[in-house]
Length: 300
Image (tube, rainbow, N blue to C red; front, top):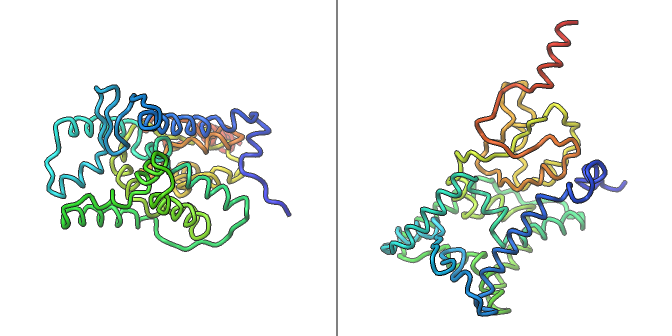
């Protein structure tokens, strides 16, 4: 018996483009950001100088990864004013739009792990090592502690995102070993293992955007037909159930979990248009359709 492809119903109901629009938007965003960083060293067009740890756009706008800055401070380094300003800009942005938006819309390693996930699905690879999702917070704390103890930016020594960018600029080398290891880990060892269970960067940004107003909402959850496609494609499927199935318990439809990446893939693959982007404040515990159904039932 063939396995039904996740999103097939949505493609039939909405058309291919609408069933892929948020995925295509993410890929465009990721590739555009990566291209801006590569234009300088590869084509001498310096729109952006630096990397995702610290960059300067048009020689004016500084952007600093606050996770890297925190490691630097703990390691005993006094940051420059431009680095502090850059970190503040990034912090404000991700507090507003959701910290783990970085993982889905910016991080170039997401292209690698998504490819591993797609191949794992297509090849029918089953089984997975179990590592608690909370492990990433342990890794996060360990990197900060080691930075303080050693006086170095420990995570940057092995950061696969930095390795990937370095490999694209300088070609094949040791940097690709780390990227390949992440790819093979996700493909053969653990489904969505790196981003969903181990990456300290994702853990850091989930803390940063815990109270962000921009959220995905299962605003039409009464229309859900239990196809499970949203759970199939979500990189953090555990965040969906409370919002999608919590009406009976008085839980609102907004996905409030900090580890939601706001990737929009659940919106793409839902043939019933259950999900949409919205604000965390628009989170009524009831559901209009379900309430109407209960009233009609009680009236009978």
